[in-house]
Length: 329
Image (cartoon, rainbow, N blue to C red; front, side, top):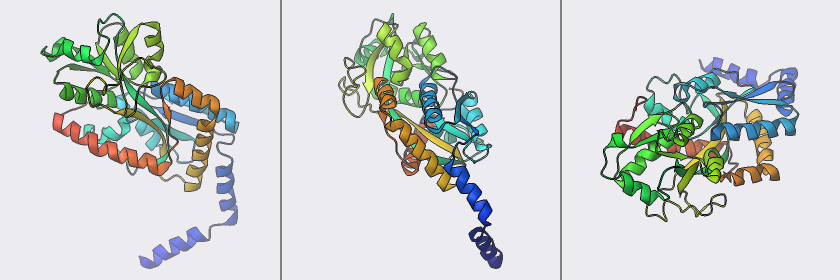
């Protein structure tokens, strides 16, 4: 066994020059003449879709390649995640994900893959504060007013939405209920776009979303932003909306977005893609678009993405277990 291991290592070290040159050329030319899919696990209309399309458009322009967004919703994200796990690790399939990937393992015991082992982290991209929104015809204008209006009422008298059981908005609203001493009924959707559509129609009364999803409707008066959940102060895109902390609620959770690929990607290829992602975020117009939508550009490396995934996995797995959250609720 030891001899075979040494031989395998020697074979890797003395790979044919032609093969090495081909790999290096492919990495240097990424994406070259190949189409690159950026897979997201939600339908069009939400923040993931917005972020993915900003990156796809700019990557195509910067590299001269063909980078497209592919919406693979369903199964609370499992459909899209599994598609990426089973794809080639040559840089032609990437996953743009939010926090929800890190909360999947406790919700799906038979997930079929390991989020630590079956993906290659590439880069953190942007971070969005949370925005608490209510329908435009709601009389409440602050989170404090909302909490006071539902306190003491049964859970089935007040409905809130999310982009799926175990998603960040679901867990964040569960945390809010414990923090504020209120009870509400969860309505899961297949994406933030459909959830927000139902909020605008008044079928649900509260949604915790990223600014990019709700900004247009808030500015038009079709929805009201009643609080910002952020570690810092108010955000420039919604300067008149008080933070949750200003209103007496210790809530500072956000939505992070990162790029990953299938497991086993060549480190040189990962580095090449990360360089291109950094160029996108360094572009003044792109940064301005994100800032206008309330986001904070992050551009952390693969290690930073892995660290935030590990942190979220530990924290929210405990919440899922403690509250008995399943994919049905």
